[in-house]
Picture 1 (cartoon, rainbow, N blue to C red):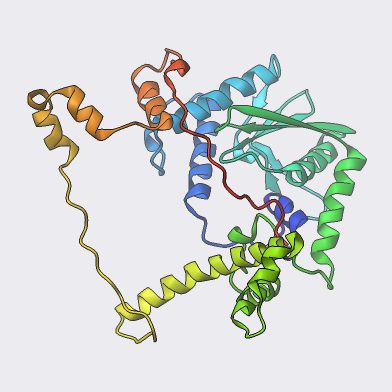
Picture 2 (picture 1 turned 90 degrees about the horizontal axis):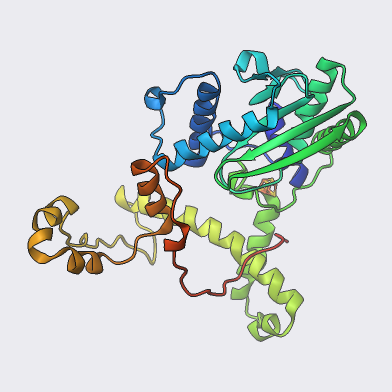
Amino acid sequence: MILRPSNLPKLAACPCYEPNPNAGPAAERGSALDALFRARMQGDMDPSGMAHDLNAEDIGAVEWAVTTLKVLAGDAQVITREEDCCVTIPGFEKPGTADALILGKFAHADLKTGQIRNYREQMAAYALGLMEMHFASEWTAHLLFCDQRQVVTLHFSYDEAKATVEKVIAAYRDAGKQPAICDYCGWCDKEMTCSLRRTLAQNALSVSEPGFLFEAVLADNETLGKFLCACAVVNDYRGKAEETAKERLQAGATIPGWKLATRRGPEFVDHITVGHHIQAIGFGLVLAAYGNLSAKKFRELWAAKFPQTPFPEETVKHGHTSLSLRQTHKN
Ligand code: SF4
């Protein structure tokens, strides 16, 4: 694997992490928003040439990032051309690319899509390289979380950035490194082959052993937590196993105990036809039959129709709060 700054937060969580070469839709959206962000910062206002379909929400998120970066930069010049944002980082085979450099302020900015996560180690790598290139002893990194409209600012001294990066690289290059179950397992190329995940799955599958006592699992909180962690890993394996079984059954193979079941698709009337009859039936009746619209969808419609008018947040209603179980650590 070629060491890249973007992998550092994952390697900090598990030194055995390997990026999956097949970028998912979230990564593709991230790249598309990144391209639009650079284009907008360089004065190109037409997103029609973008390879990825961008909706009003995506464009609104990028607009927020552009405006926020301009406010953060103030009078300072901002550079976003990829060729000018290359960063040579000690310990890395290839240079990284920051999203924006704020000249004269010893700062850079990085656009982030999706949920707010830890990017400290990646930002430390850029900061280290940029401090070397600009002969600086301190550096600031602004993370622009455009989906949440939130800025997270990190400050690094040279020593701090160097120690952060070196610690992750040393753990990654350690011949005796061990995997650590983490939030990035689902993005890891070893998701289905990792020895630690296999052991966890085996632990959960031991429920089928004759001596297994489920009452004992329920009786002890420590055992209950471990059992649920193991079940979460088995669930990932189950998804992959179901996919494989479906493909093989379709190809004519026999999987003992399983067969393909076909379900007729649901009957429906498309929205264009409904539109033709809506006046005759009555808007109120038809809309009531459609039910509630998600706040996200309504925000998108509003942003597309009234880009200059703030969304009326008071129209959003909240459903009942429900309780669910969330994993806080993985093993
Ligand atoms: S799947 Fe294994 S190697 Fe990959 S991140 Fe998870 S624990 Fe680490």
